[in-house]
Length: 319
Image 1 (cartoon, one colour):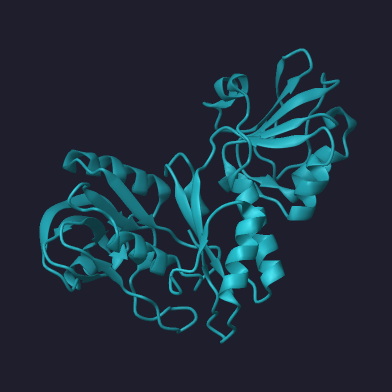
Image 2: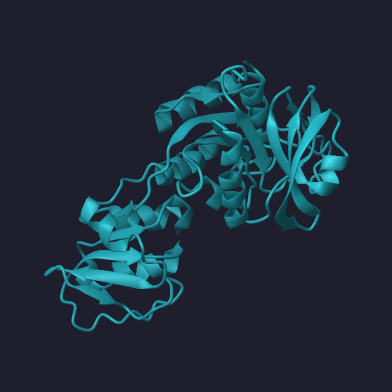
């Protein structure tokens, strides 16, 4: 997953793919967008192409299957449809380059991943898209690698702060087993648990509405938001005294759309924000260069960011 275009997401994808033990594991790959183009369609800058080794299973559209620059075995044309044709499942017979354009929705991607089980796949790798953070949800992916860099911010300190906040959200604490059991199957609305452990439907479809019905609640212990968690909602909750010691629970970090100021103001006290499903962040990769020519000090960036997030940080080009 990349925090911005040109942060090195595809470079990271290729780096991982070239080092997997294909003699020991069956690997399948796909993408939620279009990956492997030679030129970025927005910035008009050069992009790394996707290179597959022999033996890799892949999912791509009919259009891009026909333009592949490798020999492949056509295994299946699925019913999963995109604007570029149905998704084709293939297996590379020779090393070569390919454009990956997989399922266009998160649900479609899950269906494709489930479909790949019949090929006894050990590991599936998805090249994510900037606007599709939901792919990194633990409901879809077991783990993730985050790409960031100078294209996200041209100042090292700002870049570290912004990236560290995203990592903080990814690493949010898991809520209690009791809450996970209570809310796991709730997909609509905003719900509250009071000090007597009674469950209340607050009669709002989502956190986009701040007209919360708190009748009958003297003190809220837990507030579950099934959809997006926004600044407006959190600020409204913070100003209501019945929420002075409230734990807000969301499905996972991809549902959080808060600024650092709003988040820090809310949790500064006896309140907290937790998740039903916790993500696993393996590592962070950085691209110290941006399309407009800015080049950051790679070593300083890696060291400063690693210190801030307590995780390995890699500049794969430098390595």
